[in-house]
Length: 351
Figure 1 (cartoon, one colour):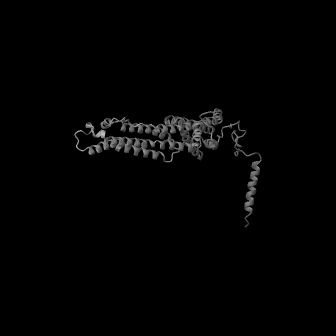
Figure 2 (cartoon, rainbow, N blue to C red; figure 1 turned 90 degrees about the vertical axis):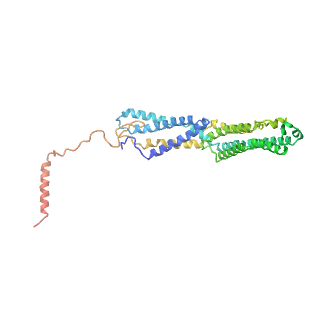
Figure 3 (cartoon, helix red, strand yellow; figure 1 turned 30 degrees about the horizontal axis):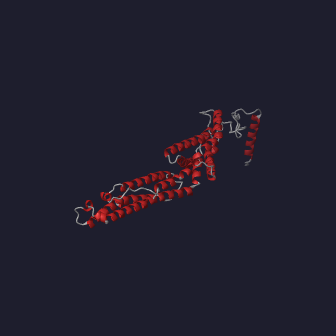
């Protein structure tokens, strides 16, 4: 009774509600901003501070004794906070509702994500076909009569067979050597790791998508770099040898599939039943400290109106009975009673 800002078990549930609200708000704001975690963090911080201030302050005002603020002023502020807290809470639900809307499409998002990153693996198959065709074409030229009669190609070399193998192996190593093998292995491993249980609960899925898009373009550029140098022997062949080109648009197709996810992140839909139920639970938990806080006995106000009585207590000072001056006639009666009592006491004993 009369404890200002009484801490109770209700605060534990309230802090838990704030933590859950912060988590879902951060998720929703991250999807809303397409992975801008800095902005999402600022939005979440504003929501958390606003909710704590708007729901804890009424409890403080309810339990105040009027020492730091008048009771009339405190009840006015308390009413303002209590009657406006539903509005503030609803306004802060935007990111939370958006997350549940996104999560409602979890299966479609996961399927699209896997299709997009798996489509990029076709880039390495396409490059290997290009490299093998280029090596085969070069090998065919080396074994042709045109190459055998080309003095610039085999001039001064006794064994043309050995030279053919050396040049063929050199082109193979350049196109499909350790650099290509290492790039392919790391890329495939990264794709496999990204495929491990993707979900909308993992907000870093957005960051993975951005990194994968950039990585896909980087893989294509590196494959182009591997194939760009044209050997002098290939130039002597007179063939129109060109560097690798993603003519099938594998990377553009994979990126296009991943870009479809933006429609899920940006769509504005009506609140889902899960979001409504979760919001109601959070609101009740936030109000617990206020509902359990007892109003100070000095306050004559209620949330609505005034109290008619203070629980049987009176604000007037209590009158103590005067025992020093007995009423008239009490002396005689008291004396008689005393005498009678004495006589009776002694009369109980007979010799």
